[in-house]
Structure formats: C-alpha cells, structure tokens
Amino acid sequence: MRANTGDRLLMHGRVVGQHDRVAEIVEVLGTNGEPPYRVRFDDGHEAVLSPGPDSVVQRPERA
Image (cartoon, rainbow, N blue to C red; front, side, top):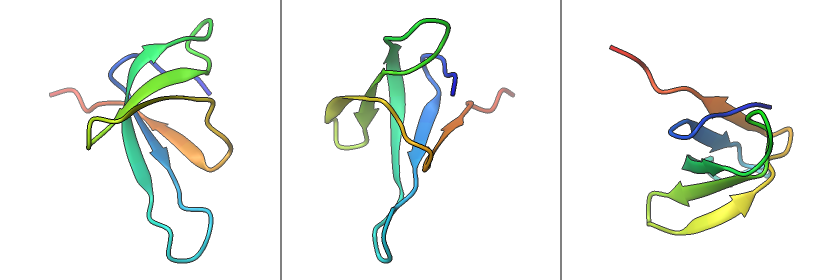
C-alpha cells in the first residue's frame, strides 16, 4: 500500500453492523509512501495507523 499526504484512507468495517471509517492522510511516516500514516478523522481525532488488508487508499479527484 502506498499513499500521499491528502489521500483518504477507507477502512471497511470488520463485523456485521460496523460502519466503514474514512480518514485523511495528513502525514506519511514510512518510506516511499508506505505505512505508517498519521490520519485525521472527520471529528478532528488524529491517530497513527498501519492499515490492514481491509483498508483502501483513495486518491482525491482532480478537476
């Protein structure tokens, strides 16, 4: 998995009824775009994550 600052990280729910979570990648801490990432959720909470196989990096759409 590779990401850039400004990309979004989509983490799919792991169990029935658990919602997907989306966070903005605010800092890439690994080399060459690899994890871990510092992310910010919509509520302002920040965390350092090493995403698992249930996560997808979404690039922002360019107009």
